[in-house]
Length: 423
Ligand SMILES: *Cc1c(COP(=O)(O)O)cnc(C)c1O
Image: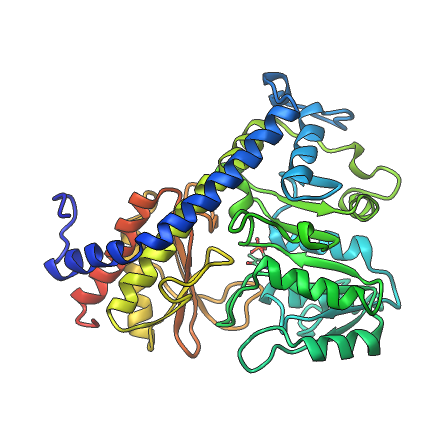
């Protein structure tokens, strides 16, 4: 519908109407998952008797911060763990994942990633690329890294996983749930459960899941199907667009405790950590997270429909069940990719007047262009798009705090491409 605020071409308006109609079934499924997860979170708030007193600001050592401790319990319950650590002071997802890795792994241990090459920024932590050598990477500390490649369809290769687990007897098996900057399918919780069974039938490795972008996308989480430890970022799904920074680790009690000694120091662990009044945002964030993830999923489903209607290859395809909030669109060349990002940026609630440009982002191996006009810098639960300038010139888009606004952002991306004669 043309509401008169944006100068949408008729072609874009018609295509959007058609895309929304054809995404109706996806929306129905998404609503069902959202309702389930929203009740799960609400139930946990009620069981833990969350109250105004939990939002108080602690300073200094902050022993016995009640809100902090309650929030840990809520994350543990919601994600199916025995225990959890949730802190605004985790600076990002990479930091949180690194704390879990350093918390659990020791010199001489082997870490086996069974989902192919991990997310770019984790390379530096493990010491895969060599660029961060000497900075205290896992490799510097004598942790051996091994990797099981995905099969030709980008799916976990169960035979090879079993073979590698037998061969390396890894202390940790590492699984990445989301696709990251690749075109492989993201993993369903069900498939994660099958990997866990496969590993545990051979060897008692700790199974860790990088849960970034996966939280609340399904009714179950990896800990529900036997994973031992998960971690993720609060400026993605798990913070509901309200947490201003941070991360969480959840899982088995003894493992979470080990992580706590890396998060602060051996001896102190989780007992310290001032919250400075961030508790309210953190509680509101996890409370809103199921709904916000639902809005992001609807935005992704709409985008898949819209851009497949313009004959672009999209992953996931329209109608496909989603296992993370990411939607990729293969835009074929840098011009289309840049136009897409410019258009999306022009529809952001914050910084709409900026023009995104490709740049060398720390931790990434090629130039990246990003569209993001977010209330929280870099928050990818807000509508945003990242695109490394490399084949196949795919844009990975995600987020949308609310569907209606994000839909307009997506339509503006298409409009910009039309303006430049690219669709
Ligand atoms: C985002 C992400 C990370 C890293 O999180 P940052 O907050 O960007 O440091 C790691 N793994 C996956 C799969 C991610 O999506």
